[in-house]
Image (cartoon, rainbow, N blue to C red; front, side):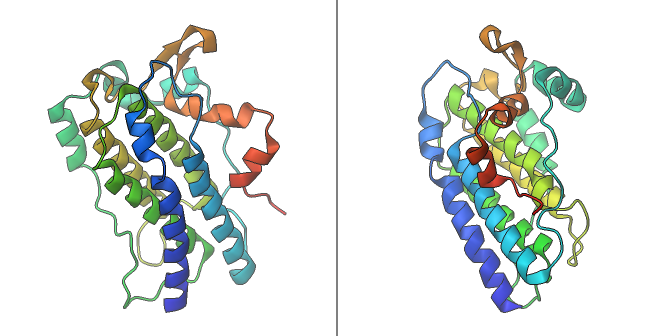
Length: 245
């Protein structure tokens, strides 16, 4: 219904506002240090998605979440799992490679058509909320120039958001024939393509492995993002993780 579309867009706008609030600051941060975890902006995106998910579950019935949060892999496991990105993890992406990656980025319809009935489901609403937020990140990145630290922080945030997608959205086709998870993954890939094209340190673009002896040696964006789950901060985790009860 039209009301459901308006609700999804309103929550999406809230998530988008959170997503874009710190991108300029992140982009311009000068630091040789590695990020320590996802930014508060990334947490706020998921916090809004959590609210929408619970509210829709209360209205439509059914599960409050799509899946429990999957464990975050350590750096070694993550690096092995990225074998399809081996060329990227060992060497930076150049201009032509970025162009090729962009060719394979799928066009995603973010905003529901006003003449179409929106699917009455928690899954469809939450997918729309996240699509609006991620699309906002894509567009905001076009107006920034990213430092080395800024690029890496965006890698960590996007890896974190990508990992958390399955907690909120099921990996199945929806009524409109699209797969919410695949659409969201495509948008996050587009975020990093835009960030990479605007990074001042061309040698870091596409590199998916870092090294920090003080933090155990090999690190990846996802292993850095997963550190938030290892901290004894139940209140922080409760902001974006949906409980079963």
